[in-house]
Amino acid sequence: MDRNAFIHDAAPFDAQAQGQPLTGYACRFRLEAYDDALYPDHGLRLPPQLARAVAKRRGEFLAGRLCARRALARLGIASADIAIGPDREPLWPAGAIASISHAGDRAVCLASADPHVIGLGIDIESRIDARLAGEIRGVVVDAAEQAVIEAGFDDAVAGLAAAFSAKEALYKALYPQVRAFFGFEAMRLARVDEGRLRFLAAADLSPTVRAGQAFEVDIAFEDGGVRSIACCLRARG
Image 1 (cartoon, rainbow, N blue to C red):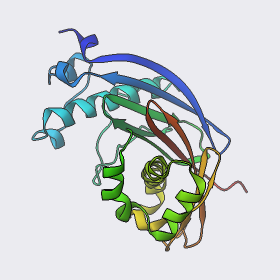
Image 2 (cartoon, helix red, strand yellow; image 1 turned 135 degrees about the vertical axis):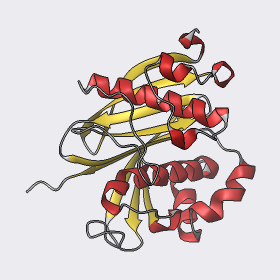
Image 3 (tube, rainbow, N blue to C red; image 1 turned 90 degrees about the vertical axis):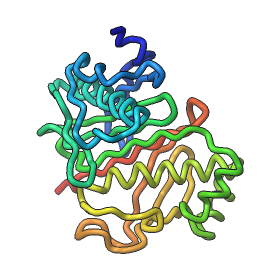
Image 4 (cartoon, rainbow, N blue to C red; image 1 turned 45 degrees about the vertical axis):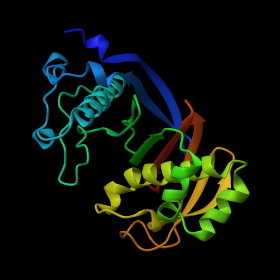
């Protein structure tokens, strides 16, 4: 089996958020070339949670885990299988924190071994059109947030995609502190800066994530879509 028929254009990259250097790995994948045998071929195990998943989901999962393994390897952290937690979150090896995302034929992982990083989230989204924007707008943002988008972006549809992606990244970054699901309404878009969105927590989510607390997410428009990175740092005493 030609494993290169599935994964291609794979490459490392570096990023930064909150002044923190981060280590990444990205790839593209061909779902038409996916086969379950690719898991053992890459030294990975198809998790039982995906036993009934469609091939598309299995392929996306494999591409994400391969990016994760290679991102962690760049940090000098060896990882075999990255298990799935009770809330379907990745269980990272000791000494590492990371985040995976995929969209279309792209997968990406961002990682850090810095003990000051207590939460990390990356999200990539493909371009959305006006029709889809109309369908998701009321779920992702409220009227006040939509006004912030329209004032801060020349293209309100692209701005909505950025807000959606940023909230997804922020959810991943805050999960280690909150340890529970929270919806789009929990983080309200307050300001748009160049390459960065600022959010305010709408309610107390945990002892360390309180109502009114501010969080920033770095955004970049690329590959026809948007990429968002959220990084939470431990308070330095």
